[in-house]
Picture (cartoon, rainbow, N blue to C red):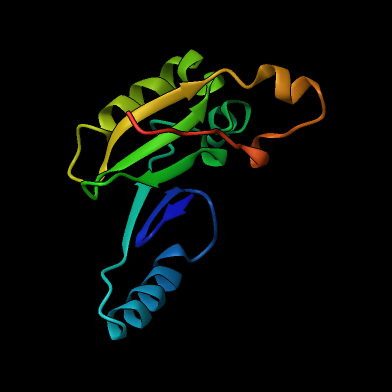
Length: 124
């Protein structure tokens, strides 16, 4: 899951991540952009935790102040390990500072899927 220069990824997402990330960082640096990969450790959120919670189908949105908001389905809040990790994440040194949870169960039951996470946002 990404937004701008930030990539939130699972530790076990792919083979040779460090090689790929070094190349991405090098290419973005040529454009004057700092690449910020944030790794979700498998010890905190296993792949088998991430899948049913749709964690990586969430959305990162940039707010007016440049900080980020993560929008996710209710399943992420209901999973104790995932929710604990997310609350740690927003306390960390990264742009993600807020979590918003939506109940998307009806959409899912009617043929939608988490990859189609669409939420109408209005000014607060």
